[in-house]
Length: 288
Ligand SMILES: [Zn+2]
Image 1 (spheres, helix red, strand yellow):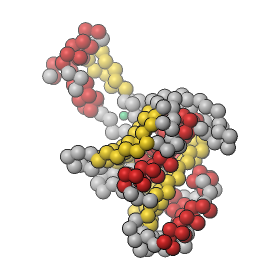
Image 2 (cartoon, protein in one colour; image 1 turned 30 degrees about the vertical axis):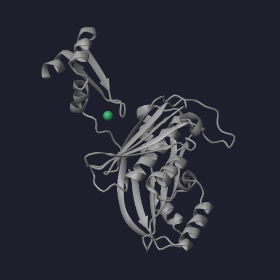
Image 3 (spheres, helix red, strand yellow; image 1 turned 120 degrees about the horizontal axis):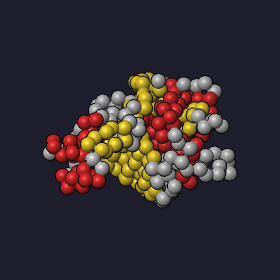
Image 4 (cartoon, helix red, strand yellow; image 1 turned 180 degrees about the vertical axis):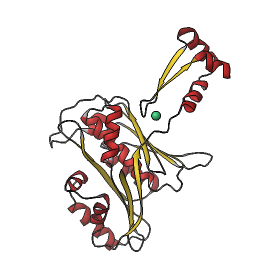
């Protein structure tokens, strides 16, 4: 299972969150049968969501990342909670695009650069927190960095990577967030910049056999970091028959009567895990 870890520098000025999300993205691939570029796009968004969820205070809290842009992938959603569980979906999982000139999958081309990234944090309060920023490139890591700079005023370096094998399987996936908290000194910022500039891509580091903790330690080279916490993370959907039924009920009597006339047997598929639920409109109507 994926391990999600957080390290903090001795004086509390630098926080690093890191994950090897290979298993999470592999599970996503099995559910959504994404094309390579869509595996990279949704895989990066899932990785970002689970990294960001490490800072949630309670296990019930949820964090949603939603991207709506002008690319052929249409829209992408990733939802993570305080238990390290994450799920996601993509509007069009079949996008095929030529590789970029540097040989990488064209994630920005699939997602689109003209659009918005929305971050919704449900922290159990009356209203969820909603932050929104225009996309920088649709490559996702840059968009997350921009979100933190604009909406949360936290200087952040975000690195995300999904390496898709020639047979379309996920060879490696992972990422890290490096964040400056109040108390970071100029010397520390210089040091971090040098560290980040010297680091290889996350997938290259994972491919060399490094763990999430080792990657975090590499980013914090020269500091005396302490491991704050470590938790397991997984792709998991929390859908249920009850929840689907409530969604049907919310359509209202008129709509349900219309469905009953057209096709009483209803089959609803969960957009996050593909589980199918069967209902009869006539039976739902009886409960109203
Ligand atoms: Zn589900």
